[in-house]
Length: 121
Image (tube, rainbow, N blue to C red):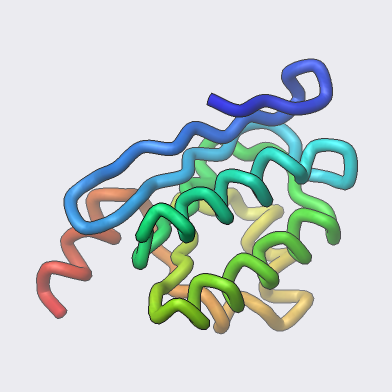
């Protein structure tokens, strides 16, 4: 588990059937974004074609976090994969809608729903 800024943010990476889950916890902002950047790059470089970002443990995300998500999405798409968001809390989901980027990401209520949706497709 990668952590940042005295434990204010953490990202845990774990493989699941057909995907890689990056579970985020804490506050994602300018001072804590680097572990997420690094985890996204490592997962993508490691052959992760379907990356599921689990936001259920994330309390806060600012514009720097949004920027990391958008750049990560582009990098994953360039390699033929997808970046999907899971378990968004209302304030973070609202921020994505206000900024107009919510429609760029597949959104799922939880990991099980994301995996089930992929199996049906």
